[in-house]
Length: 342
Image (cartoon, rainbow, N blue to C red; front, side, top):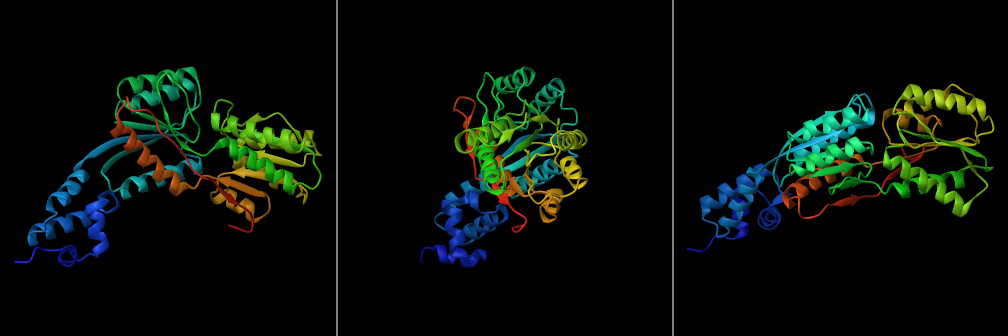
């Protein structure tokens, strides 16, 4: 009797030949229910590669408890990111993911540190968005010492132990924002800068890259001292209103951190100037509307779906690698949106 072939298995399972090949060579790229169907068909027809398929199916039985700690849920960006990470975990095929996503409402370092330790004690791998602070670093070290790998999202973090990172090259973000002002502003002048917090390293790196570009390419601009919004729309609005009052000749605003909706409200409340340029951070409903009505000139943004899938993959990789096998640094290109591209 002729030995069953891959086309025979594909026909028996009701899938394509390419799907069977992927089950055999790249099982993590195939959904678990499809792998199960192929396995059942392989057993029924006595397929010679049954052992390989069983191994692929067994991999799906592994479950990783993964935790993700984000900042305030009230911020649209973090809700989008949390939802996207949940979708990426659901779609992940190499193993089962038991995902916990939590949000920090109190961003004081001591509260953040306590939340990191709490979630770290309930998970096998942990991803966090957090400020750089000694209390936070101590909490991260405590989690690492318990054998739980930590992945920093958006901004890199340091502690005694090794921390992986998933996010953008923030230096490039800042230099790209500066390049945009250099190309769009008709007459160089003052640029206001908003950051969420001086302890959020991604925003500090954004600002460093921003300033370095002007030192290198155009010293005609005056960069005002960055103002922290503490991730608050109310504080951001107050800062922008004061900047516009104190510096009526200001030619632009770089919103590098949180509170963008407050900044948008302040800009809309003043007469629109065609020669005023605003560069913002992250695309969601409010910033998209601000692009369309001309309040914002350009948005630099994380590609949310890519960010979410890289987060899940890196957490699983860090968990499987173990504490003594180094850390992972994953960066990917950012998206740019103009009023004509949304």
